[in-house]
Length: 264
Image (spheres, rainbow, N blue to C red):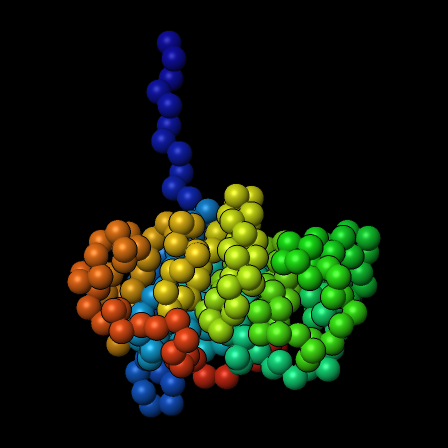
């Protein structure tokens, strides 16, 4: 007699926020938000300036302390999470220290350090850096100074740095902001390839733009609260998302300056 098939154990979300609150100074920015991102999902975090989008992602990676609630990464409480090589983070380009005196190759290689032993690069590490540069179309600029790059090229380098660790989860804060159309297409294609390979992605965006076909779910914040969690805005209609119709792609960001390293 055939035994009944047991239901599969539920898979832990890659990201889980439950009742998360955070302040910047004395100003409440996150007011008890819940957010989950499941393995293989591409989730867009949308909202007007000051809604808390960037603060939410910075709380996930530990750059902003939370005053209440719980955050888990890959099923582990963030306070105990140590396997940061599984996560690639792309900060806002405007706050990512563009004047650093380093070459493209040096910046991208820094994203691989979490996979090395004592900072010593092996053949596989060099290969991963090369692949990351090729993915964003910057392999021919490896020896150039990042200070000589255009805004779009600089953004490609930041994404390559995140990809160098071959992460399972990508968190990207405004990857398309202030980027020329050619670089937008390169970045969209890069992201398509990562998604096809099984990456999980959380994106902070002002508008979906060329990334729209990749988005599985949109989470819209307003005043630090979740206003909508479901189909992207276009699918549900702009009128269902009050406050979002005032969002513009080149508006000022709602985050404060951050450091370039993941947890540095």
